[in-house]
Image 1: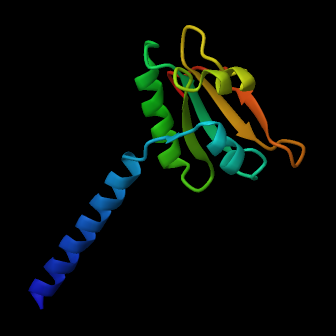
Image 2: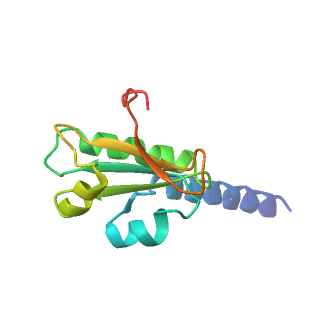
Image 3: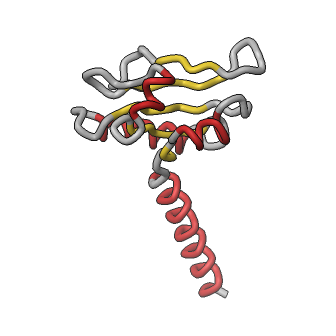
Length: 127
């Protein structure tokens, strides 16, 4: 009897650990023009998008923040990242090419069935 209770407790703790680990390891989806058109544009889902180039200082830190927000908001929004070094024309077409720092955008639906892309201009340190 006692062994069964200990086994259930251990299984519960292992399950909890697996869920927490999986949530923390959720990487932003890599977005290119095809993924954007098929899965983001006018699909009714809110996305948090990071626009970056690998050489920009601080992009990994901001990416980790995006990952955390994605894990916390799982089901409410999706997260993705756009590497403008490998997708320069796509970034230029969307007007999201990073300048000196990575940029964060929200693709959402405010007043219509059409989505819009708006830059997040808040403090990324407390994002």
